Structures are given as C-alpha cells and as structure tokens.
Length: 431
Ligand SMILES: Cc1ncc(COP(=O)(O)O)c(C=O)c1O
Image 1 (cartoon, rainbow, N blue to C red):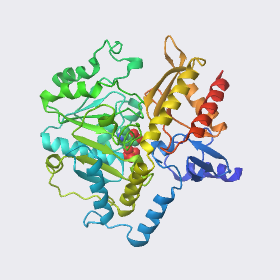
Image 2: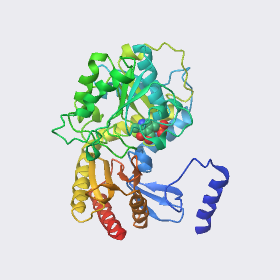
Image 3: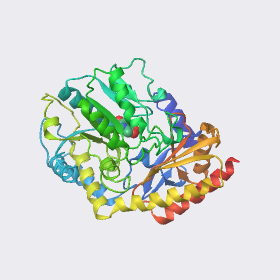
Image 4: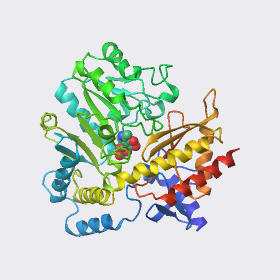
C-alpha cells in the first residue's frame, strides 16, 4: 500500500501541473468516505474538518444525493444551456423560494469563479462602469478577472492583472488595518470605502464584492454592524453589493441560508455561491433580482451550466439540509468548537485568535501573543500533527498562519469532542 502512495506522488509530479500543490509533506490520496469520515489509500480513516475546502456539505457518501445522481445519470446527464431541463428549473424555483425577497433569478455555472465572473459582468453592464471595489485579503477565484479581485499578493500571481479594481480595508479586527479597536472604531474600515471611491475610481463604481466571511483570507469575520455600514457608505454612489457566499452560503454560518442576510441583516444586490451547494458536485450560482439579471442580454452560453446532475444534486442537498435541520446543527457544533478552542487558548500561547461563526472557524497562530508575530511554520506543523491524529483541517490567511475548520454540516457532538481532543494534543506536540 505504501508503494502505491509513493507512486501517486510520482505520478502527480510527472503528469500534473506543478501549480497544483497539495497539503502535507507526504500528499494524501483519498479513496472513499462515509459521513464525516474519509479514508486514504493506506486504509487510514480521518475525521474531515475541512470537507474538500468547505464543500462536502453532507459529508461523504450521502445516500440521498448518491441515489438522485445515479438515477439522473441513467436518464439525462447533460443537455447544455441551449435546452431547458427539469432539474435546473426545479432548483431555480427552490432557490427563488429561499433567497431574499425579490432575488428570483439564478444563473448556473460550474464554479465559484464563474459565479463571480457573471456577478461582476451584470454589475458592470447595469451600472455602466468598469470600476469595482474589493476587500484587502479577499479571494474570489482563479479566472483572470477574479484573480484581479484578490486582495492577497500570493493569489495575485497571474502575471498581469485586469485594471479597475480598488481595495477597501478588511474588517480584520485582530489586526485592524486602521490601527483602531472595535467597537470604538465605529466601523471606520467600512466608512473608508468612501475615501477609496472618491480617490481611486470613476466616482460611481459598479459594485463592491465582499465575502461574508473572508475564507481563504483567514476566516476574517466582520463585526455584526459591518455590512449595514458598508451598504450605507456605498448607497450615495449607486454601487451594488455582491455577497460572495461561495464558502459561507447554505447555512454554514448557522442561522439561515445566506449569512449576509441572517447574520448581518443585509440584503445584497447579488449573491454568488458554489462549493457546498451540490454536496461536492461542481456547480456555481449567481442570484439576483430580475431587473439586474436581465440587463445582460447575451447571447451567453455555459456548456455545463445548469447541468441536470449538478442541479439535481443541489436540490437534494437543500432538501436534506432543511429536513435534517442542519443549519441549527452548524450553529450548535460551531458554538461548541469555538468555545472549546477559546478554552484551549487559555493554555496554549500559540493561539492568537479564535474567530468565525457556525462551521466557519479560524484559529490564528502566533509566536508571541503580545507582538502577534505570525507563525505560518506552526500552522504547517499543526496540519501534520492533526493528520497524525487522524483529523484533516485547512490553512489560509494572507500570511499562511490561520487554521481553517470548516467541516461538513453533519458533524455531531462526538465528532466535535474528538476534534478538540486531537487539537489539544497537536498543540501540545508543538511545544
Ligand atoms: C469566497 C470564494 N469565492 C470564490 C471561490 C472560487 O471558487 P472555485 O474554486 O469554485 O472557482 C472560492 C474558492 O475557494 C472562494 O473561497
């Protein structure tokens, strides 16, 4: 078995692009899974607290999704956007039911990057401006346009950037970009958007795109008033708000289908999502009001957009989330994990900050709590230590020192306890 894994590393080196980097000193080859557990090619079983980058909403091998996909595959696997298909229309109707009032139209694609491409296209077309605002530390995808929206240099690594993107400071309270403290700051970072618009744009930028919680940027969760203040700041310019819920959507934040609405009380103009919507089946979605959706007259094609397999998998996923009350579970398990991690922070100095909401949790590691010296080396070690203890986690942040905990929605009490115990032992092993 060991030979096989070694062989896989060599096969990847020989035949995959070097840019496709994997986690761990010895890459992990995953072969199957069940529930919140996934197995590698050596027979090791892991508790997966990263869910294929925040994507396997229902964990592995969910029978309802698997059955629906198998049934659909035997009937109709693909038609293209040149034809209608029932699963696509069913999903569009379901989304219109759960989306904020008036956001009744969807465009389906295959990824978060594509969803954001469409959102910004709609904004540029309807507002007749090419200027866009994004956040420092943002991540919106890996197409040329979405890379230009990235607010982290390591993700701006395409040689040339599209112009016309200006950046607003991120509400990163642990390392406030304005050197202030919450709440006395009165959300100055959101108000700073005015300065950015006035000095770096055409004066009426088409849209501001923001992740509800910056995921890749290190699970940066804005204070509760943030999006209201941001929206008010942008209102005089007619600038649209695009909420990127590629990671945060479908209940992961624990209090409603879309975190921007349920956690921040703000209805954006456009919502984008992907990842967890179809439990791991590739899908992207751009949701908006008809008057915005229809400003772009096309023609437009997306060969796999609205694919019957993906849209059927998505609809079953949403049904299961609703029936099994999984949004409430995200809240319950998220609170337990955050409380447990904050408790560990009282003993382990490497933990600088624990933040997030629901099952979208970040742990920022530092070498020194007072100076907040970043510790990307400890983050890399933590991934390895957690792997030794059979738990998978992720990593992110502008400086690579934030651990990302974004497990499937089905995580249960025993899983959460197991996670915290492995986390504690891993922290102890760092000393
Ligand atoms: C917030 C956010 N937006 C967009 C994307 C891009 O999604 P995809 O990789 O499906 O293109 C990602 C991917 O991690 C993301 O986290």
